[in-house]
Length: 161
Image 1 (tube, helix red, strand yellow):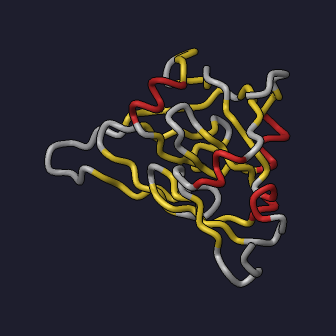
Image 2 (tube, one colour):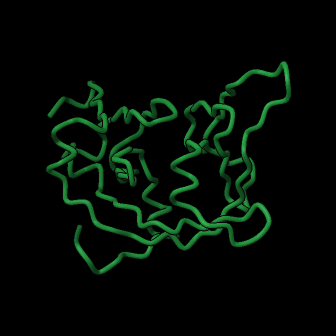
């Protein structure tokens, strides 16, 4: 593994992803979501400052998701992924219907202070491995998932994947 000063990069097709012991979790959170539909003449993409400090890009037609009690904590989700994995439970209110597969990032780094660049569909995020899990989605996409959110809103499912 790299030293503390080096960044480790993870992509969905990295061989190490297939060796990790991902476990299924059910997300109990209800979230606000809206499609990004720019008006004529407006840019087809927009940068979104995410709660963890990085910027991701939302494209026209994709969704911007936020916590109901923290509407400024937003992040983009690609349209086909959102529509495959979320269900509407009220006006602009959604809950994830698919399981989220998670593994602590420290299973990759073996060092909680190691910085990791995770290449997501919407852009690159740099996180401290001890503060995040690695999530793998329905199409093999990956993203960092905050450890505190795992403890607050994720319920382990008893089956191993």
